[in-house]
Length: 97
Image (tube, rainbow, N blue to C red; front, top):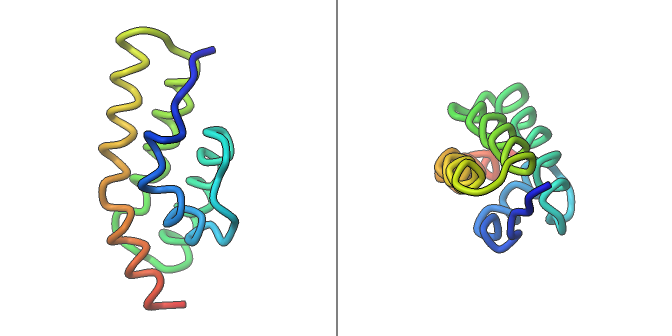
């Protein structure tokens, strides 16, 4: 099983934790689980566009944990690409709650 540095995800952990209504994740697995909760809260409850990107990022991160080498790196980079609009979505969510 490959590992993913939590520092790679650090720019997103606080926002995802806020949207998931939890403390910031301390492991990649916790972060992946929080992405699902945040996607639900932002998408289903708050109807914020782009929330489904968080589910996609979670899937890429999960797949990256089961891969190695170049494939691992590509999957992590794809996940991070889907997290780029996290701050904007969570800012919108903050205005609602």
